[in-house]
Structures are given as C-alpha cells and as structure tokens.
Image 1 (cartoon, rainbow, N blue to C red):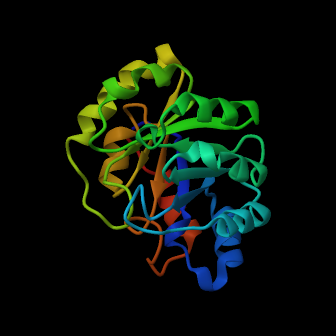
Image 2 (image 1 turned 60 degrees about the vertical axis):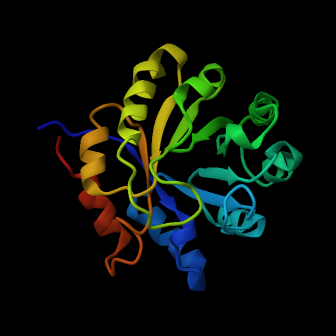
Image 3 (image 1 turned 90 degrees about the vertical axis):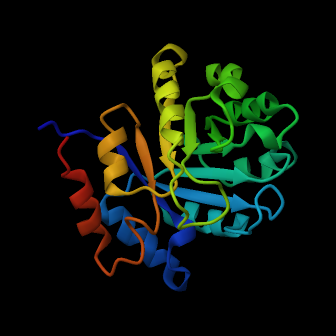
Length: 223
C-alpha cells in the first residue's frame, strides 16, 4: 500500500485556551504542519471565534506557518491589519461572497508576500469562483457551513472537490479540506490529490491523547 504525504493543520479555535502556549508547543513537537486560525465577525457567519490578538499571540509563539481563514464581511477594509501581524509565507483565505471585489483583496495578500487563498462554502459553486482560481494558490473547501465546530459533513461537497481537483494543475492551486475531517475522509480524498486537512474536534482535540500520538497515527495511514 502507498504512503502519501499531506499537510495537517490544527484548527486553533478548538484548542485549550487555558494554556495556549503549551498547545502550540505540543502541536509543533507532535508534527503539525500549520496552525489554522478562524476569524469570525458575527455577521458573515453567526458566531464569534478567534480574535486578532489570538492570531498575533499564536504567530509569536509558533514556528510553523499560519493559515488565517477570514470569515468576515468586506475583508478588504481590514486586510492590512492582518497582514501586518503575519509573516511572509503565511496563508490568508477570504470568502469571495464577502467582498465586492475579492481580487483587490487577494492582490494585497500577494503584494505582502503571503499565500492568497479563497474559502468555498458548501453552497458556493465552482463556476462562481472560476476566474479567481487563476490568481489564488490555495482553495479551502468547506465540508460544513462555516461558523461552528463539530458540524455534520455535507456529502455533495465531494462532487465539488472532484471538480476542483480536475482544475488544480492547469490553474496551479492546491486544494485543502476544512470541516468534519475524519479518518475516512482523509483516506478517501488524500489519494485524489487533496493537499491538506484542517483537524478539529473530530480527530485532534479533546481526545485525551498526546498530539504526537494522534498525528503519527494519521501519518502512518496507508492507501
């Protein structure tokens, strides 16, 4: 059986905020590839999650890259604040529906030396973001409606993934999975070309096991 390598990203909204520095250190020692930061404004999604200060602290404590997922209305109005508190090589995702001219926001991310990305909701078709696929480097496919952890997987997302995976080489972007990420989803979609998976409460957090043990088990999967 083949062994595949894919990125594993920790969904930090699920972390233990009573000792956030230890969470970051333990995840890095355990082999996490990046830290996924969910920023919510209570308007684009009906919830509040991590703050700018949470992101800033994790950026200062972590050696690995950050993937910042902006679930906010009109990200162009505040994108400079996030850019100033990140490093070159970090990724910033925006939702195209949240912006009048998303390409303008993406260009600011590119100019700052960061990786431009879009997040696609379950109800967003590939056709509506097709042109943007030529300028982004990362596409985050939401397997659940954004806003809360622990939601059920929406099965029609698989067809969307297949569509994006067929386009990724021509348009030069990578595809990532976010939401309800279980072992069977990794086993199904990693061989198809999904480059990374955001891990939350389904696989990583709240399991009363060392992160190193959980991540090693995932890494040793065979396909």
